[in-house]
Amino acid sequence: MQPRELKQLPLLLPIVALIQYFASTTINHYSQPITMFRLYILALISLIAAFTAKAQNTPTFKINAIPTPLSWYNQPDSFAIIGNKLVIVAGEKTDMFRDPNVTYNTDNAPKLLFEPALNFVLTTAIQHTFTHKWDGGAIVLIEDSLHWIKFCFEKDYTGTKRVVSVVTNNISDDCNSIAVAGNKVFYKLAKSDNVITLYASVDGKKWLLIRHLQFNHTKPLKVGFLAQSPTGKRCRVEFSNISYQAKKISDPYVGE
Image (cartoon, rainbow, N blue to C red):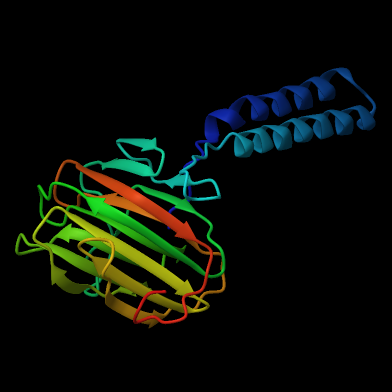
């Protein structure tokens, strides 16, 4: 997972200049070393304060059904949040995949993520127009850039609208599941301790188990929503009927 781009270099330049100025002024005009030390401490405090202010100003967003704030990892072309509905527009050649042939590794798709509870269930409907090959919208679960799950509704290599799951442990697998006739499908991702279960449904009521696997991790997880357009210029994905519950499912074959 790529870190949020902080763009801190412009912030640092005036502080570095301040340190250089104080240092040269002190050497030229002061004879007591303690004065130079105090000025360096002042500059250091200013530097720390600037970084703290920048971190505190990192924007977060709220979706009604999700109790914790969400943050962007890779910015979208545009987005909108209205209640429990999220729209993400991914830009040109955006994707998240680590090719088993090690010829294509990328992680530039926009993702809106939050930190979930230890056990949880996240559901959403995913809808888009399937314009270009591999255009898709997904639920993602991420430990870091080498360990993650992407549960995607995408236009596959044959042009079919398909339920696809990608589990990455250094290298990605690529599992094509059921075809879907329409442009909309319901997805559910359930985490119970170290077990992840993925479900799909055409109506949001009757769920089909897609994958059931262990996902061990040592770092905090992030979960959320992704849009991608690996071969196209853009892909607009709508996530609706978003629901989040901090609970542990008791029967993975039922999903409850």
